[in-house]
Amino acid sequence: MTQSNMLLLVLAVCMSAAVYWDIRERRVPNKLVLSGLLIALAMQVWIAGAAGAWGFMAGALTGLAVLLPFNMLRLMGAGDVKLMAMAGGFAASAVGVLWMVLYTMLAGGLLAIAFAALGGRWSALKSNLFIMWKLGFSELDARGTGDEAKLQPAVRLPYAVAIAGGSLAYLIFGAP
View (cartoon, one colour):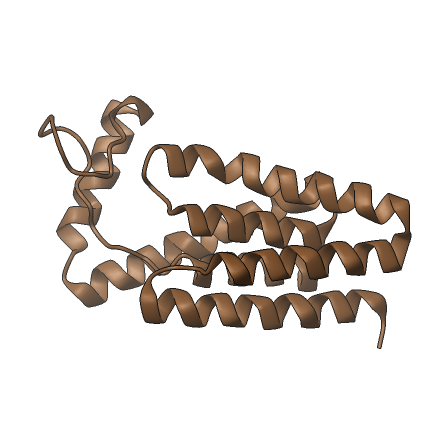
């Protein structure tokens, strides 16, 4: 088994556990994320030595930094942000994590459409898309409080599903 296949397999196991918890309890346990981070660090050091440790840090910090603003806007949970940091540790590259995030956002969009359509929240989703298009990002407020022009919650997604799909897609297919 190659080293990249081992990374892929271990990430798939970690992501499967995260998806299970997110679907079941709508949260990703910190112990799971911390375990995944430590495993990713150990694997990166085993594969590339000190350069692997630096790659791990670049990937993990990029994953954290890119999704943190979404958490601050209350559009994403903290567990999802930490899970992306864990996935970034497996990518061991800031550029790789950016591709992971792109794939994750695409998977998240498809997931949102599916949940909205199946859950009868299609009109709220369309309304939110219109507001974002018309008024811009200054109107983001996923809490649904305050100004009526603000976004209303359409669906609450188990976003670990999208993060798992996007992260694994990057490790399998790479960048286009």
